[in-house]
Length: 220
Image (cartoon, rainbow, N blue to C red; front, side, top):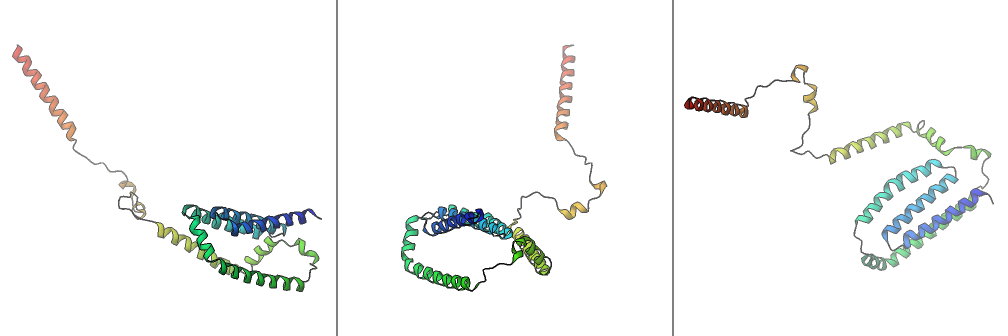
């Protein structure tokens, strides 16, 4: 048995066990962590199948963004395990029915497709890089669609930033339009102001000198 085949079965076994623990774990945080583990092993399987692009998308989108968000939400929510168990017991029959239907549908699709497939792959299949082929397809045949999607994402990003901006009345900021209209001679302005404290000190000094002079004359 080849080394890649051993790795494939090992990652597949870990993925199956992690997926089972997702639905059987009583702690929601543990269930989310098992789901992250299943995504990592799924990405490893994609890499073994020469689908590096799909593996990176799985790690960046699902593990890096969605699952981290789920983990923070679950950790911040004060979920009572007793209430969770009560809801699970209440919906157990419906869950078993839906799960059985899913298993039957997947079994029918897998076995029908497996026996109908031609298991002999073409000779040049191993030389085809999935990442390069996806890149060529995106930037040649679907270039307009990619640009439209990029514009939509950019608009959504700008809209999210705009909606979260809150203007405060006590905020100190410089208006861009005013800063553009400023001339060099207006940057420095000399303003003459009366210093009341200096006048008072000067008046006090003069009165003290007068008293000193009058005191000296009295002694004479």
